[in-house]
Every structure is written in structure tokens, then in C-alpha cells.
Image (tube, rainbow, N blue to C red; front, side, top):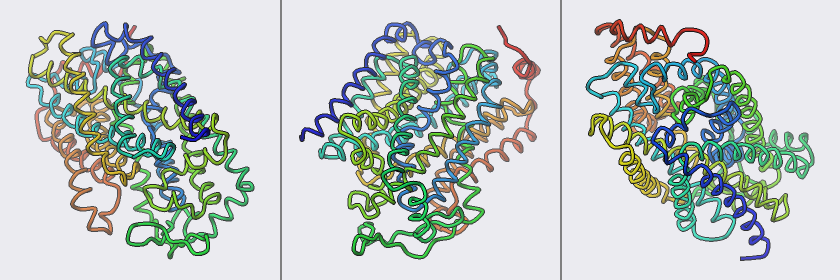
Length: 525
């Protein structure tokens, strides 16, 4: 290991020690009971709730996946995705947060998303509980895999070690950290990591722009590539059989620009629909200490999101100007290292280590959320809610959660084993899964009095299954079927919820009264 690489390593190691310290600080409180471990006792302040929600949501794809897409094929895909996410962030905090915070207390003081949905419909036989917990396990395992891919790519690029050994090392660290601290440690460290992430993005954006000769130079370079700087076209890198972009005399080769039509734009904007169904964000709504603090949280989260997304997309474009034909960025997968390459090029080793800790921050902040929620889905909802009929010992529940957490991590490592995995692609599938499975049923549960248990079950199943059907069977057919699977699956789930609810028995008077109570104004305290 060279002296410069050692400095980068030491800077990142110092950062990790701080993260571990946060976990140890909250460890005793987290181990007190399962509510503290999984929801932090509903004690999050507005800044921590907002920043931890965004950090856990964005993950390593914000610093690697999104810049990689912009570097590889231009602004259209990355830009419309970013706009959809920014709008989705605001709308979710604006219309869902307050109602869910209130309703989760009204409906049996629920501490997980499956708990809430099951309690919302007064389930006797916990069908919704089981379905939602299983979908969470499946999609969060995929999500965790994307984080492990990020760790493997980051460390193998930095230190020249094998991708597999670095991926495994990153996964082990995340598992140990999540074991220690639970939700409070996760949220507190996510707050710090959200700050590190936005500083890292802005630093590389500013320094990269200056190194490239200014925004005018960056824009002119982007415009010279067919379709690269167009919101309605997409650049087409010329690649060989191995997927490596071809270059002639140091000039990257691009083919004729592809079309990025209205339907594609709408489907890409639909990334914003995913916010209504992602548990790591919804749990922050449930965990904030007071409803009235949600307004401040909304403003914080939206500003952070807009700044970070803009910087991430811009970094990909700037990277193409600085490194037009860099061999280490010559495939769609390796292009996701553009942030790492720029950090090493623009900064002295110690500062590069601190900045790249932002990637690690993003990865940890997400993967610990994913593992924790997946573990709670099984231990609280399947083991305690179904197997033990709410009579399980609290310590036993926490032991089961740690076993499940380890198993989810192992499966995630298997999924992440392919070093050519594209982070953006993995995340987009899991995001669609959550958005279509939980988004419609969450919105209808919070805002439509007539939805019933049968409609909720049918909507969740149709949305979740359609994500798989569209992605694996229909999307390869191309044409209209190539749109992002979240959009059609979300629509189908919503239609099914309405039809089945109207065709079956109305909800009981007690359920309606709880709905009306949750719809009231002012704090419940």
C-alpha cells in the first residue's frame, strides 16, 4: 500500500471509529426493549428525523450510481430520476408524514410498517402482516446487496484489493454496527452521515467544475456528445463485446443519440412514487417525537435532497469532461466509480479519504436501515405476530432479529457477488418493489375511508408481483414495456385496491372511527 493510499485509509478509518462510537453510545438504550431497538421510542428531533431519513434513503447510489448514470449516458436518465425523487420527497413529507405519525399511534401504537397496516384493518388472522413482512424481507435483501456492491467497488478501486474480499469486509462491518446500536444509533449516525454526504458532493462539484475550466467548458463538452446534454435524448456509448467503451486517440466514441420520449420521462419521474412505500423513510415519520416538528423536518429534507441530487448529477457530467476516456470508467458498471476517481484526482490523500468517507457514510446509513427493518419484519411481525401470537418474550424477539439480520446479510452478499453489478439497476428494482407494494396501500389506508382489508391484500400482492412480472418478463420485450416497472405496477395496485374494496364488505364502524380520529387536527398529546 502506497503512502497516499495509507493516508486515505487512515482518514476513512478515523471516520469509522466515530461511527462505532455513536453505536456504542446508544447501545445500552437500544437494548432496553424492542421498541427502542426498532423505533427509538419515538424520540427523534426534526433535524435527525429529516437528515437520517434522506441519508438512509439515498444510500451509496447517490454518490456512485447516479453520477455513474450521468457520466455514462448523459443527463436525461439521471436528471428526470432526480426531479422525480425531489418532488417525491417534498410530497411525501407534506401529505403522508403527519397522518402516518398520528395513525401509527391510534392503531395500536404500531412500531413497524407491517404492524401499522395490520392494526389499521384490525386483523384477526394476520395475513397483511405476513405478506408485508415477506415483501420487506425480499426487497430489503436486494437493497442490502446494492450497498455491499458499493463497498466492494469503493474499496477495490481505492486499495487495489479484490472486489469480493472488500465487499465481504464491508458487509461484516455493517452487520456488527447494526447489532450494536439499533434504530437510535442508526438515526444519530445517519444525521452525521447526511452532513458528510452533502459536503462531499458539494466539494467535488465545486473543485471538479474549477478543474474542468468552469461550467461553460463542462456544458460545451457535454453538448458536443450526441444526446448527452438533452432532456429528451440519451447518449449511446459505442462498446465492444465486453461492454467497454471504445476510444480513438483518447476520444470516447458515441453512436447516434437515442430517443428519450414522454412515456420514458413519465416512467422515470415515477421514481418519486417510491417514496410512499419505502419503510426506512416512513419509519422516520412514525419515530419523530412531535407532529408539529414535521414541518421543519420537511423543509430540511427537501433542501438537502435538492442540493444533493443536483450535485450528484452534475458530478457525472463534470467527470466526463475531466476524464473523457478514462480506462477505469469505460463500462456502465465501472462508470459508477467516477466520484472516487475525481476525489483522488482533485484532493490530497487525507482530504480524499474524508470525502470518500461520504460514500461509506451513504452505504452504512442505508444498509444498517435495510438490515434492521428486514430483521424487525421477521422477528416482530412473523415470529412474534404470527408464530407466537404476540406472546413472545421481548429478549427472544431481539435474539431472533439478530439471527435474521445475519441471514439477510449473507443472502445480500450472494446477490452482490457479481462484481459487474450496476448499483443503479439493483436499487431501481428494490425501489420499485417497495413503491408498488406499499405505496398505494399506504396512501389509500391514510386517506380513503372505504379501503378494506381485502382491498389492501389484493393491492399489495398485485403491486409486488407485477414488479417481478414487468421487470423479468415484459421489460425484455422492449417498446412500451421498457418503461420503469414502478409506474405500471403502482397504477395496477391502486386500481385493484379500489375495485376490490368496493366489491367487498365495508370496513367496520370501529375502523372508520379510528380513521376519523387520525384525520383530526392538532397533536394527540
